[in-house]
Every structure is written in structure tokens, then in C-alpha cells.
Length: 623
Image 1 (cartoon, rainbow, N blue to C red):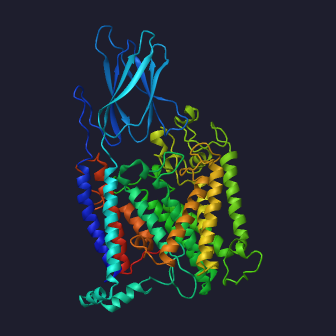
Image 2 (cartoon, rainbow, N blue to C red):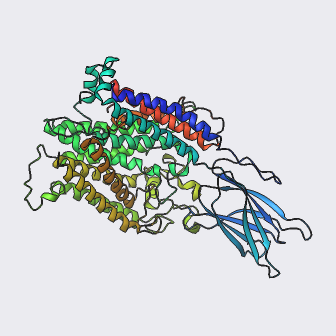
Image 3 (cartoon, rainbow, N blue to C red):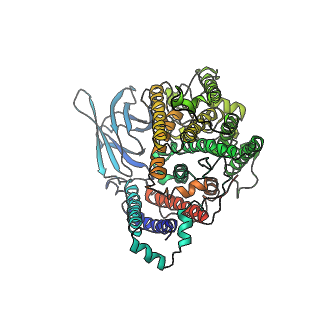
């Protein structure tokens, strides 16, 4: 029986079992009972109810500050009236955020003095009371937090989903081991599996066209034509996670993009996709040149693909299906595929200029043998370093009206509200100057935490320089695979060395902190430390995939291998059809993490199944 067909069956079972399991998890994902002595509004996801009970004969002002908001001033949440001279304490209800820990500060309205401060991490849909009272006649104020009803455990659906998929993976591994037994193999062949099908699946004849795309395909450019499944698997993993987080990621904060500095799961996948694209460029162009394809023809293909990527990207990020004609006044220009297209153009042309028709054998006793995969392409390194110098100069030296030179902050209430309209510093200023306000992203991830009002595009112009660097580091991984072909120890060692070097650079740039480094890790800006950190992770991850998939063959790469082989189709398809059934449907409770997680996992699994079916039919969308 074909391994791919088994995977298809397991995936369908996974979707069905997942729906049943998450339905059970939904029973625990419900609002906690409210306090018997007060009315509370219906809570949404990531919200809790807080009642402040004031026993002091003075109006109190409640301020709140999220731990995730760096250098922010506390924001006024509301006023709690004073207790009447001979009356009962006053109580005011509030809704607070549960994603991150909060600092609550109570000031007296008469003297505007801080009376007490409480640091607390509220649980989702829990009910809490904050009692404010005098300790003694010296008017010392005490604040105590009481949990009136326990919050729900919103992370149980993730645990259930993990257990379901882990169980199916274990079953698949057991079945793979059992079917290798001679008795089982003969039985399966007798039941209908043909020798020809087994031969096609286990050989490389199932691989699509040998004339592979430079942008999305990866080969070992020898005469064998054998594919590196590890690259397709790594690309597929990045794509699957990208689809999952784009669909909502269960509405968990760590499956969304970071508000400003720092990293979440959602911030990992796009740079990895860029990295693998760079690796594929080096391998594919080298293979084409070895087959005698003219450089002028390759240049035309590169330019054509870049233009197609850009145009497809512009189309899918400006949907207007049922809202009438699209207004040119709000037409967004930057985007994911647009950046991929331009990055691919620069890196592919650079490699086309530098790549050799034949790889000369360098003697291992040469003094520069250990770094010949770098030295042979030194002009390309000079070009990329020059680009990075331009990025540094523009970022830290370009004067931005009304903002400090070299500003890297989010604006809004960040930096104590001093630079409200300076979101992104030079990067935001360049985009707003070149593309104008209405043609860039209007709701950046900093909008919620930092309350920014300025538009800012995470796929803007200045950050494209660092995406070129990311793809070029991926290209370096491709050069290692080329120059040390079949020398697994050499390849793995060099991947680890590159990961170590880039990790050290990241540690220096960030000072091993989220906000206090010279250049913090920032996905919105595509900062230099963001690129070095994610490239470090990519080299280490590539070691795992290369060793387990291509060297030891412990893992076939399924299921991620299939979407990795049809990456453009899956990405465009998931964007175009994301609002249609079966990828989205009306929920019984739209404020349930369990229902959102089930919907997003089912939608993502469907795209994996689609990719598998297309692979079986040998249908690959190439541009």
C-alpha cells in the first residue's frame, strides 16, 4: 500500500477525530459562573471581569498597564466613586485583558497620588474583585485581589489537539513498521496493491518535471536529478504553520504576530520561507547552468516569475468580492508575495551573475578549502553587505520629521507617548513618503497594545533589504549543499557553524533581551537581529530535516512534503478561499478558543490533503 495513500487516510481520520475531541474540549471552554451579588456583561475571548469595591471616602481612579507594553504610561480604565459617609462600599465593574499580566494602579482623585498597586495575571472569563480599604487611622490604603469564580483553562483545546495528532503519528509509525514484515507485505499485495504503484511511489519517478522552478523547487544539481526532500519538507512546514496562523491560530495571542519587539510562532514562518527560497535558488540555477541553459533565458525566467509573484500578491491582498469596484485610493501595494517576488529577483539575479557553469574541484589541502563556498562568491557578499550598510544608514541616520533620529519604536503610547506618530521610525516614514498613507497596511499589530494610529506596513520598502539578506543566507546554505554534495558530515558541520555565528551576532545585537538591545528582534521592521535570529533557527532546523529526511531517511517528510511541493498554489488558494466553506463556517460560540482552533486546524488540514491529492495527480502550479 502506498505511503501517501496511508497518510491521506490518517489525515481524514485526524480531521474527524479532531472535531469530536475539540467538541469535548469546548465543554470546558465556557464562561465561569458570575458572582451572585452583581451583574456582569458577557465576556469575550481573552477577557475577565473585575469589580473594584471602594471602602474609602474618596474617589479612586483605576489605571492599567500591560507587561507587554514597553515604556508605556498607565492608561485610565475608569473612576470608582467614594463610599458615602455612612453607606455601603461602592462597586464598579470593568472588563480586563487576560493575554498578558497587568499592573493595576489606584490613585486618589483628590490628590492624584498613588494609593496602591497590584500586579496580576487574570485568567480568561474569570471573575475577580479588588477590595480597596483603609488599613488604619493613618489612612494607609490596602488593595487585595480576590478570585470570585475560577477562570477557564483556554489551553486545553491545544492539549487535546496535540494528543490527537500525536496518537495518529504513533499509529502511522507502528503501521509503517508492521507493513515492512514480509507476511504483511505479501498480504497487502494480494489485497490489491500493485507492484507498479509501489515502485512509482518509492522511486523518484513521482517527482514532477526535471526542469524545476528556480523560485519554488529544490534539487541536487548533479546528473542524478534527485530531489532534496528535506527542503520541500522544511518549506512545507513553514507554509502549513503560515496557513494556520493566517486563518486565526485559534485566536491565541502566541499564534498572532508580536505587537512590536519579540517573537511569536507567527513571526517564524515567513522568514523561513524566504530562507528556503534562497536555498532553492542556488540549487536550481546551478542545475540549469550545468544542463546548458543560457543565462539570458534564465534571466528572462527570473524577471517573469518576479513580476508574476508581484501581480498575484497585489490581487489577493486587495479582495473586493461583493463590495463593488475597488477604490484606487485605498489600494494596498506591499505584501507577502510582492516581497517574495522582489527578494527573489535580487537574489536570483545576483546568483546568476556569480554562479559557475561547472563546480571546480578544490583540493582539500588548499588553505582556503574550508571557506571556499564563501570565498568563490565574495563579490556577492560585498554587494549584500553594502545593502546592509544602506539599511543601517537609513534606519539610524535618516532625519524623520517630528521623530528622534534612529527611532525604532512603535509610537502610540510607547516611549511614554512622546512620539505618537513615529511608528516604525525611518521605515514607516519611507513607506508613507513613497507609497502614501492609504496604500500601506492600515492596522499594524502594534495597534492594540500600543494604540498606534499611524498606518505601518510590515512588508514595507526598507525591510525588503533585510529580506534579501535572509534569502542570501539561504542561498549560502544552497552553496554548502552544492560544494559538499554527499559529504553529510561537512554539510551538517557548516550548517551548525553558521547557526552558531548568527546566534552570536543576534545575542550581541539584542543583548539577549526583548527591548534593551542595540537592535531588538522586530518582525514589523524586519530588523537585522530578526534576520540573524531567524537564520540561526533556520540553519539548525535544516540540520534536523536534512539528517532525518535525506541522510538517515527516518522520515519521509510527510505530511509537510506535499504542500512544500505546491507552495504557491496552497498559499494563494488559502488566501482566496479563506472565507468560504469548508475553510470557515458559522460557529455556535464565536468567543470560544476551542471552536476557532477546530475550524483553523480543519481548514489547514484540508489544504494539506489538497496538496497530497495534487501530488498524486502530478499537478504542480509553477510560475
